[in-house]
Length: 543
Image (cartoon, rainbow, N blue to C red; front, top):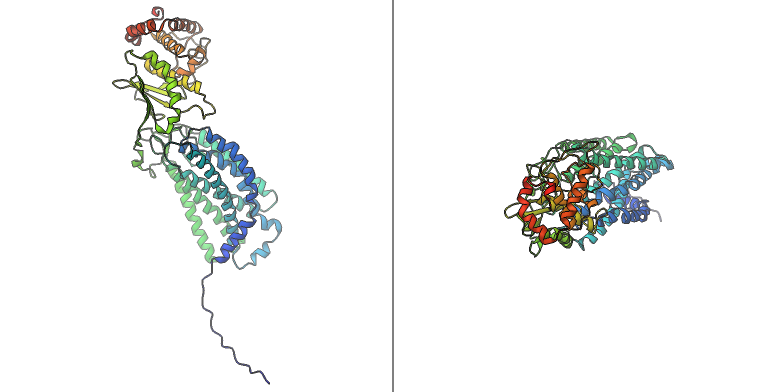
């Protein structure tokens, strides 16, 4: 039997577009073999002792707690993400396998993108895990509002840029020392960005993702504007595209002419986005609390007022958020925003002794209301208070409006006792102001009497009636259990410069007035309060 040979008819193969399965498979392989997950235990320990611990020290307000994502959590990732990405990027160069990679059917740039994407994915997974823990715990404590997502998006974009920078450095300069050097360089640049954000007045400092901590009532009375977050996201995304585009433009990328032209277009688009973000940052201004007006950029960026960018700002978001205050019904009702209702007992206990002492006096407050931080500035500059509490007494009938930028119980620097002393000092100073100019931005040095500081190396005569008002302020605080040594901090600016002899005289008169029976002291104040405010009462005329 013989075999019959038949001619084989050949047909042209049908064109099929390249399947995305190999790219996904390459990404999956890189994801399985990426060393980033090995850093998670250390990152978890850093999360507990740095961002989580810091956030728990802030009031249970969403925007304030979320600030640790960019101020604390992302900086903890900087060294690990950049170092691991540089190590992965230098893998082929360290192992001398470039020839084998270049023989692959896909350009080497595609494999590099897969390796970068795997490193970024693991970094984002770890970041989102920390966000979930932080937001989950905060959700059990807050009484107002919802979680902000702009910080989360900006944090993920910053991690992607860090991974791109590290990976590109490792791919272009492969070596055993590339990863540690890239990690150290990223840490130094991140630290310098933080210093720019909190210590320099240039509006361009808003581009640093590591920004300042907002006021404790951020997003409570007014929506917190996302302008800066949008600008930062534009910058980070543009720089990421530029850095990754560099890998596609070098000769070792294996990209053909067509792909190289496409990469060049993407790189140019990323550069345009980054430059646009820089230009928009130059127009940033701080928003005046309670107003749609933007202040000048001359104020330091470390201030807690939000920053807005006119081209990205939505003026409709400047309207106040409606709420029903939580109040304690008493002779003088004390009210607070529902977001801070856990602190209402502290506020009531802090103001109670002074309110009882002022009850029935001309100009005494009939109600106490919380106001947004930084909103008590008037055209005449009549803002009373120390660094942690401010107050203003105005209206008919008078209402004492206070702000509390540092709240007790959950703060590292503030305790319920000092918080109460600051509130009492703000109320006393607003009820009986000294009406003097600010003699020293720092308050000088505290004298032996504990009243107000002396100016450097000088004596200053007191104006008519100023010494008497200082003594009455001190006496009211003594009755409210604020010791002499703490009264300077409680009263805050404007400071009155006193010599040692003047401090002694004021302290003696204050102790004498505070030692009177409550009824006698109250009767004298009711009869002489108008003359005292007008400056017609001298220190010698105090009982």
